[in-house]
Image 1 (cartoon, helix red, strand yellow):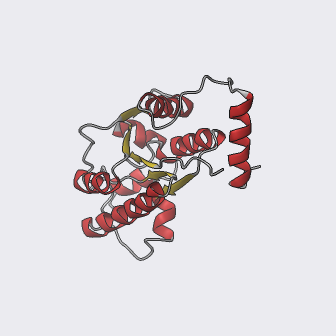
Image 2: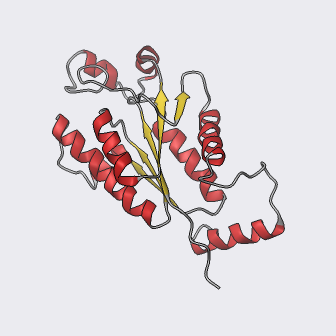
Length: 204
């Protein structure tokens, strides 16, 4: 008997550098994999060193980079994978382009005030941008266009990463992207099904 084909979709994290996109996306990835789902994360920094190596930070190059991530998410989603994109993706037009391409698209805005990001600034990027050492830095010398109607807004200056991840999972459950599961409550049949999927994916 064939396995039910899971419906794929894309979760798109957008927000300024240091806003928590990668941290929260990895927590969401973990929670979804625990449910036996196939999940792939495309992190903006990782993609730039592989898929988009050689691109700069002009608007044209940024758009190309985000479209490339969107295209890969599109391919994954249509093949039953939950694709998670985590990239600054500063321009609404290109985020909307990816939404139209993919269809099942959940935009998650990692919102955090610039003043808080400057204080966090572990890598010293904002300091370098403010002194002009880094050019074309989003939020300082380059624009960031906030989402107008994101499906989920994370206030990462007020929430723990775990609380933010729970917000995303709650949205996915409420809108039937995934089945709602009471924390820690699985039937024996569900446990076997999840274990089987995890084993097939190489996680067990």
